[in-house]
Structure formats: C-alpha cells, structure tokens
Length: 111
Image (cartoon, rainbow, N blue to C red; front, side):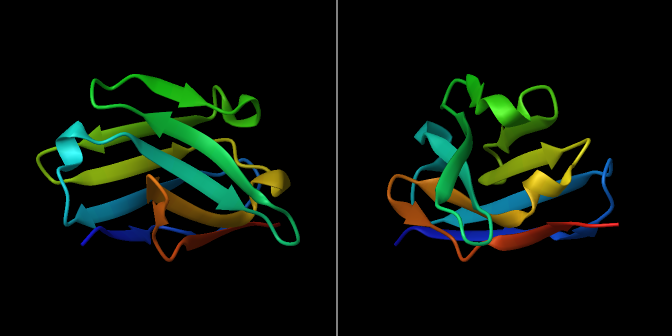
C-alpha cells in the first residue's frame, strides 16, 4: 500500500532554512503527481507545492521564491527546501499522493 514518511522538521529561527524529505513506497513514484500540504495551528489544511512526473513545479503564492520542491525518482523521495522561513510557515507539513498523506513533520519558526 501507499506509504509516505516525512522527516526534517524542527525548530528554526525566522530567516532560517529547513529541508523536508518524504520517503515513499508501495507505488510507482516516478510516474506520480506529488504534493506538499501544511496545516498551521487552528487552520485548515493548505496546499503548498506540487511536482508532476515531468518535474513541472507549482507553488502557492505565499511560498514562491522561498520554497523549492524536488524529487529523486531513483530514491522514490520527495523534498521541500524551505528558505527565508517566517512565523507564518509554522505548521505540520505533509507529503501527499492523491488523497493519501503521511503522518507529517512539524516545522516551528520561532525566535
């Protein structure tokens, strides 16, 4: 079955960087459309970024120019490089294939 395991979250100061990873198994990763979502405390789930099988990337407006999504098909892994983090980026981040999400990794931006 589809398995998604996120890692890389943590506590970071404003302006800092983190790289999230999502290890996947149970499906053909190289042909899959993959997404990152996040859920801030008390808020709804928000789409962050997507990448298709050809490497075409899209981002929600608030992270454009700061976040970079990437994939390594050989490792069946999805990544999210997050730079210039600010308080509004505090959330639990999830990778997703279709309606399936992992358990998430928490990112806290705080001074």
